[in-house]
View (cartoon, rainbow, N blue to C red):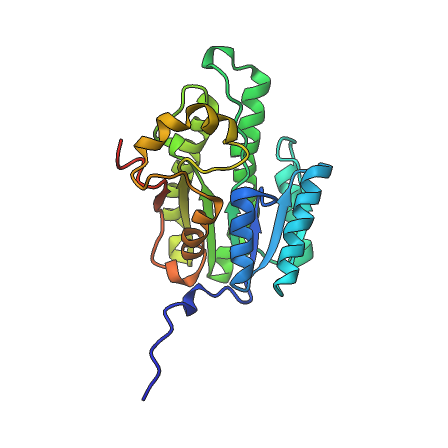
Length: 262
């Protein structure tokens, strides 16, 4: 009797190297650990502060305890060359990047009338310029090797913008546009580009907003709860592995049905 084919085998990432930006906690951490659990070697990016370095070290300790391999890489995306330097450091250490998860971003909540040039530039640098720099530095080599995965982490804000997130929401909409455009251009080479759009996820970033607005938001989520960082792991594994090789240019909401119910 022949064995049934293993439907989970295409999710394995043995021999692959992944870079997850903003991977020291919450969604980035969960995705980094998920990729590592499937056999990928993971570059854990974090901002160059003591707190973030300590968080990244904890992520690596968790990986190592589970028999996975990885390394931490500090980089400040608000600086001109932060993302370029990160790409160079990861390539020097690992030799290649097969999977690029663009998770790092910042949001500065304020009325659109009060947005300063400093706040605008900081959000654009972290949320968009770093994306462009990493794509330019890493995707062409994926094309040459004939395999690659790019996953951008968007937000429901890309289509349903909060009035206090004028720049952040706009940057997420632009990132989605880039993902669709790039998917069309690099798909023939074996590289896929997709976007995950989380909804109301219970993270440290969202703690104050959920405490303030949660009771108004919750009834608009059909599954009846806020999301958890771990809810992003399954979709991320699908889109970062051979299991999702025929998914390209997709925008997948992980929001408990919030967009569908609007």
